[in-house]
Image (cartoon, one colour):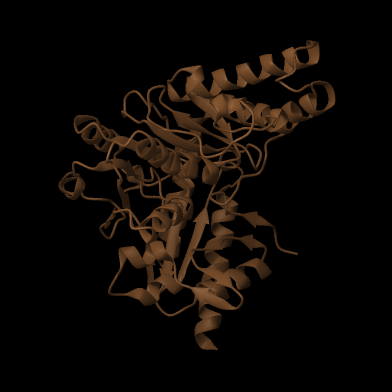
Amino acid sequence: MSKLVYCDNAATTKTRPEVIEAMLEVLQNDFGNASSLHKYGRKAKKLLNSAREVCAKFLNCQNSEIIFTSGGTESNNMAILGALEFAQKHKTNKNHFISTNIEHSSVYKPLKHLENLNYPVTWLKVNENGFINLQKLEESLKPNTLMVSIIHANNEIGSIQDLEAIGALCKKHNILFHTDAVQSAGKIVLDVEKYKIDLLSVSGHKFYGPKGIGFLFKRIDSPVLPILFGGSQEQGFKPGTENLASIMGLAKALECRINEMPAEKIFVQKLQKQLIDKLLQIPQTILNGSKDLEKRIAGNINISFEDLKSDALILHLDLKNICASSGSACSEGNIEPSRIITALYPNQQHLAYNSVRFSLGANNDESDILYIAETLSQIAHKLRKT
């Protein structure tokens, strides 16, 4: 049997042993509710505060600006809908959103929902490498613009937007700036002060932490109201008993990442370049996203095959024990084209059905690269023959 190669780290990473250990410690010994006043509750509260401090240090913000959530989707919804809730309650007359046509669904769909309710949304187009035009962004700003929400590193093609420039522009015009940093947190140094970010979303399972846990950075003076109601946990933004075991797992994963990121970036980028070079030797292939690896999240490779459907390629790769993914979504037998790839090539929409994403991580090595390249070359040749 061939080796098992996991290269779908953009979907989720393998939980690291130190994280599991930290979570087990809480589950076995620190089962108290952080809202309780007795000794078990006080210990749970102390642990919760220590985890919040780790997350705040990671972003260069205050502890009170970290709100633990169930992950990126909840954080993104809380930021977008919570900002609108504040604007409506305080009758600010601000209701216009600006975003891009390559956002993750957890930003794209809430904004589409608001657009269907007749709230104005401007969708910035990206160029063939997946980057917005800053001049177009500035031209899109209006007196009633409430928020700019732009993804940091794209989940399919890995292109990294210039947060510093976007943040400076939003600050200049006194407009809320939210970024979905789910793909970049734990891989890129993030500084909310430097980038003038008001709201930022993070998910733990993208950097070797547990699933179902993340956080929203909300600048202390950001005009955002809760969209969930219940208890007073997490300043009332995320009511309900905190998932302390997962929160401690998230904090442990971040602690590890702070020291590992620079060296791992060099290592993973080396593998990334090797795999890109080898895959582009297969006939009729196109690299989607930035060709400059410094402007692309480390480990991300998205390739379109001119004449081969991604679902067939993914299934054949799986039969060879290679775990990759497609930008296409399959629902009840219907294959939908990748919205992200469509945005890159509006006049070549067939490429949106033909893209395969490999996302490498710390657990990959050079033997994986050789095996992926050789196997995919054989699969492409076989499918083209048949």
